[in-house]
Amino acid sequence: ARVTHVILFSLEVGADGSVAAQDRFPDAATYAAARAATRRTGARLLVCFGGNGRTRGFGAVATSAALRRTFAANVRA
Image (cartoon, rainbow, N blue to C red; front, side, top):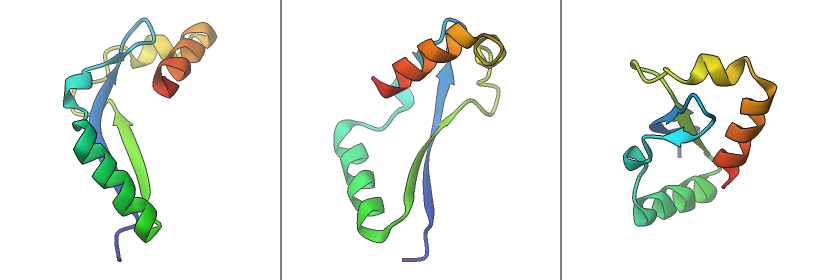
């Protein structure tokens, strides 16, 4: 009841706007359980991109409007 945010760590931003390192994302059952728990308690479920040396593609995507659009579309998918 005291948790306000749950952060899933850490996917990577590919230099081409892709979502890399998806093998780090929880399996479907764990993700569904996390979503259900956060919805039940009102906590926010966040996905972290980068961090701990996992930011190689971030600069390229951040400085290109086209790559930001590609990245956003890939995150939504």
